[in-house]
Amino acid sequence: MTVVTDPARPLDVPGSSGPAPTRPRRGSYSFNRISPQEKVLRYVLLVLVLLITIGPFLWQLSTSLKASGEDIYTRIPRLLPSQPTFSHYGEVANTIPVWDYARNSLFVAVLVVGGNIVGASLAGFALSRLQFKGRRIVLGLFLATLVLPGEVTIISQYVTVREFGLANTLFGVALPGMIGALNVLLMFNAFRSLPIEVDQAAIVDGANVWQRFVHIGLPSVRGTISVVAIFAFIGAWDDFLWPLIVLTDPDKYTLTVGLQYLSGTFSNNPRLIAAGTMIAFVPIVIVFATLQRFFFKGVEEGAVKG
Image (cartoon, rainbow, N blue to C red; front, side, top):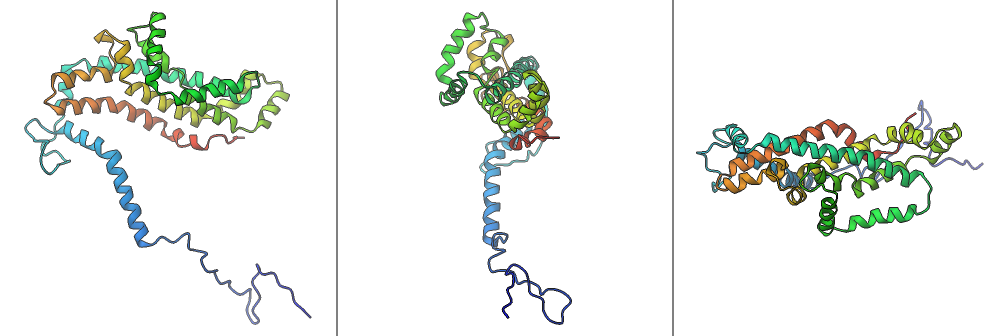
């Protein structure tokens, strides 16, 4: 009699209480094993990336904390200051109206973030969930704008802002960035990943477009909204060229434009420039630390929560 056995099932060994232990196949753990050479290479690459990304920030922070009598151009760079001091930060505030510039930058950033959250969400939902004539053409235009660099359209933007009477105003600085094409595409992709059956069920229940957008769409894409908010804030806060073109009144300068006075008047004292850079960097850290919990969920957007 021929006995047919399942190759995936272990055979029972006579005299034993259960099936015989299976022998691991050759190469079954090869993907989980890391050789010592590969581990060393990974750590070397990680340290190299950290030096490239975090190194300039740490150097600027160290320079801003070094006393006036300490040489910052030594042959062997010293990251830790021998006599740390915060006096340069107070000197920046006494040299330029840094808090007024920061308030102007915050006003522009709030307008840009609010405009992108509202405008990009509405546009992304319309392009992904609604059917209308010319939808593909509009989506193609958004994609085409990503190919053009910002310097190509900066003249036409300035002419438009001037014709609207918004030159030399903070609203004129914020207006071109209040709806970004990249943010619209991010929201489009987030809304498109939602199952279409959810919309169909809501339509059967009598929900209109606005109710589907507010009660179904927005709660499911909060991570992507956080990504849009962070990108919009960083772009508006760090922008230098556009505010420099639009604004002519020094009292309306944003922080990035106002910091140029430190470089012009005190060009031989990089400690003040480093301190001003750190002051401009703090709000970005605060915004990212506040939204990072939702930021890392943005890449996994689209799951329906019941």
